[in-house]
Every structure is written in C-alpha cells, then in structure tokens.
Picture 1 (cartoon, helix red, strand yellow):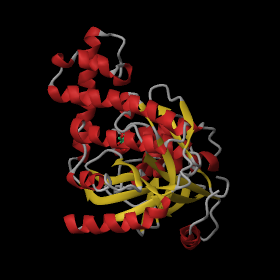
Picture 2 (picture 1 turned 90 degrees about the vertical axis):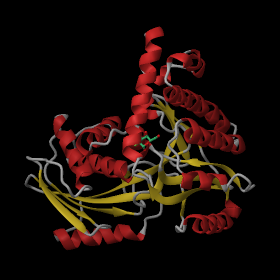
Picture 3 (picture 1 turned 180 degrees about the vertical axis):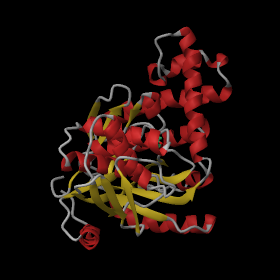
Picture 4 (picture 1 turned 30 degrees about the vertical axis):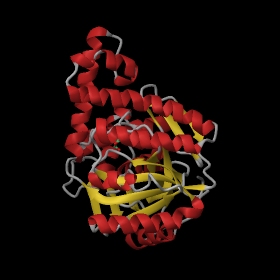
Length: 391
Ligand code: GAF
C-alpha cells in the first residue's frame, strides 16, 4: 500500500462541498514510466512499462439520473454531460472521461449517472500518461460503482479505444495497460500482439528512478507520431511481398529488414531497423533484470536513446542534451528519452546516495543551456489502478 497524499483529503473535501455528501468510492489511477521498448507497442512488439506514484485520485458517487457531473480539482473547472447524448467538448479534458462512457455504452455496458471529483500529482505535459490514468481510473470506478462485470483487460482495451476514437489520438496500448496492470516493484514485459505479460523484478534498492522534465513539447509531436506509424506500415507492406506471414513489424527480425534494405525508402528502413532492434533489446534487458544486473540494463537504455535519436528521429535537442549530460556521471547507470518524443522527460537510473547531487547538477546545466527550470521527479513503481486503500 502506498502512503496517502494530502490531496486525497482535499478531493474528498471538494466532493463534500460540491455534492453535499461523502463519495461512495475512491479510486487511484497511476501514471506510467517505460523502461525500454519505445514505439514498439503499435508494431505489436514488447514494452517494459510500470505504473508509478504519480497518480490521479477519483472520488465517485452514483446519481439517480443520466447525468455525469465532474469537477477537475487541479484545474478548478467543472463539466456536466448527459449520458444519453455524448459529444466531444472543446474544453479538452472531459473528452478522456466522456470517451470512456461512450465506449462502455458501445460495448453494451450502461452505467448510470455519476458525480466525480478528480485530481492528483501527475505533472501535466510531462509524458507520464495522465490521459491513460484518467481513462482507466474512470473505467475502473464505473465498473465498481455499477457492478458492470468488465475484466481488467476489457477496461484496458476500452480505455485505449476511448483515446483512439473519441479523443482522436492514435496511441498504442502500452499506457493504458501499464496504468491498469502495474505491480509494486516490478516492470511489466508486455507483448503488444498477444497481450501476454510477465512481471520482472525491479527492486532498485540502491538506485532511484529520476525523471528529468524538459518542460518542452514540440508541436511535431502528433503529426510525427502518425508519420512513424505509417512508415512502419509501409515497411511491413514491403516485407509482406516476400514474406506474406508478416502482419506487424514484430513478426520480422533485424536480419530480414536488412535483407530488404534496397527495396525500402531510406527512412522506412531506418524506422524498421530501430523497431526490430528495440524489441530484441527488451528481451535481452529482461534477462539482465533477472540477473539483477542494472549496469548492463542501463547500457540498453543508452542504446535505445541512440536508436530514437538517430534512426527513429523522435528526440529533440533538449532530450539529447539531458542524456548526454549523464554519460560521464558514474552515479548514472542508464538514461534515455521516454515516451512519444519531441519533449517530455528523460528517465534515469541514478545511485540513491548521489540523487540530490544529480538533480542539482542537471538543473544547473539545463538552466544555463536553455534558460528553463528543470523539474526532476524521483518516482517509485507502484501497483496499478485500484480502489484506494486496497491497492
Ligand atoms: C505514446 C503512446 F501513447 C504509446 O502508445 C506509445 O506508442 C509511446 O508513445 C511510444 O512508445 O506514449
């Protein structure tokens, strides 16, 4: 169980103030990190995420009508909608929640109305999947509140569809899966094709995971994400001409991609090679975790960064700078950009005893180079979405 944060009481208090009663249910929906396996999920490959102690708390209660009344505590905003007529809102954030209700209904589940206050400590825009935490937390909460009978994997898939179809972001399944299936002190090796998953121990007693937030989000983000997906699909269609059994890049090997290099446009070749190498890297790195060899694991993180920087081309100056700054630091075992790219955070494995010095040094050099205050978040791996108090 993780220690309850002071904002849990704040959220309960706001629920009282708004709705004049206690919430019936408190749910915790965590954000996620990803240790390795970047841009592999939509290629059916392996990823290695975990849910963390950056979270959204949901205070929920039933209503007797068909209305959803929502208060976003951090934003000091509220929103109401009819469950009978769900249409996207220009306000943005309500779409992650309405999308879940919409998908529940499309799948034949009909929760009644609800009152919701949510808030937490996931830094916005840092790439820690507050969107997946929102979707999964509400799916989980309504499933509990109304006894809908959905399985955990149903809720994951439904939350991903909410993001794809209602919000309009063409993400893979990693973020929602990690937010739901996370486990204390373990990373999840998820096969994004079969959805088979295994937990690998990540008990970095002498080390701490620190996220360094660039504070930037370059606008290329969404369009380039979709372009990468298309480039991977182009690669698959070329490989398919020779190997009809290949449906996704995860069905190919680096050797096969190399064998067809001449048939592929240069960028398509680079993307495909990165993806096949990255999937293999996850396999090898998990073996290192079993051997408790975090030094070798950290080297794989640097290899991933190089692939994302040079072959997949989703990094940016700020991320590269932060990773480069760690290379000569003996206290850092591994560092890389994390998530979709073009901004957000780097993830670093740092010796616990050197963590404060690491944060101070990184903040100073980043401020000097870019004039931006570097926010650093030490994170702990926790259980996934759960009823608060029962995690
Ligand atoms: C974003 C997406 F939402 C994930 O599905 C994944 O593709 C990731 O980028 C890159 O690994 O977080």
